[in-house]
Image (cartoon, rainbow, N blue to C red):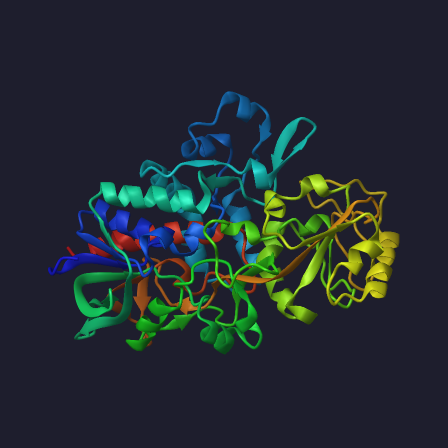
Length: 494
């Protein structure tokens, strides 16, 4: 770290932060990035993602802008369909129960394709999500749920590409440096107080961009804002996302926004570690539940596994795990759908039982009401409307009839051995509450005016997500508002 003031100081080193740094540098600004984590744990939650990015595209030509390596053979064997601006708007509105800030949503959607194209120009590579978002039907791959694009190498590949671009651009990334306080002079942010290798020092800056994530790794804050029981959730990603950026901004009078009682939380392996493990990445998640059923330790189903595509339910179903006895449940499948289970079900760290009989399966589940489990399976099997064809690429309407807790789509009987069950609990990804920002990523104060010299992007932006989340939108949001924050912070210096 140099002693001279920098033009733009970025707090964080994940996707949003590095996009902000590159964007500011593109405008000619001198940029420094501060990362709380050591270099081998850099990247915040971005490094723990699978790399899916939700983006507007009207057809294969738009995808070729992002994935120029697509071959003629891939195009011929794939129905990429489209994901229009209106479809993206509809998903954001529907899943957030019409509470998402329309101005922020408009920016996110309208700049999604342009931003990914810009990222590609910086060395980020994209590819179709064949493995997780497409099924081969009648000889042709069909995508579903509005997701088509992922980064090569997943989240780690994304972080590596962006960090390499920063190095090439001459941007300094300082590791093991925790930001603790914003420096303010006459109402304007003029730097950050940090702790680096045990020493406290001040770094002067003409502008500061906060991109240090939400408060999901802060056990006390989770319990304070999300509510009782959330202290027991596993953290899917970085142990360094403690809410520092949010806290620092609030301390100087920033306005809070968004659903502070809400979070993106998924079904996560019951015996996963307290925080994310980069060696395993996102493979502790268990996202094939629409093809089976969920049963708690009382032997009961408690939600509609087929209410919608996985992309539109997974981020809210993690919360449901905390409400179950033992803070979790079992995903149950039979041989008919075993081939549909994602690769994450095959890792060696999985919590799994298997049997040739339903009772034998239940007998292996600690704390399970075996008699009720068997009864639930029998009642479920009898309720399946099997006159409707099963199709995993669309909401097929293959449902149950007459159950208190029904299944709306993809209802298959559980009767073909061998049977498998996977124990899951709640894994929190990121928190929805954060800071109020403008369309230009400027942080707004409690008086309604922007705080000079302060910008924000990534998870700590409030107002985009409520109750739920369309899969792949988090990384896209981070990139879009990161690019904006970098550009606008640099422009403000002129």
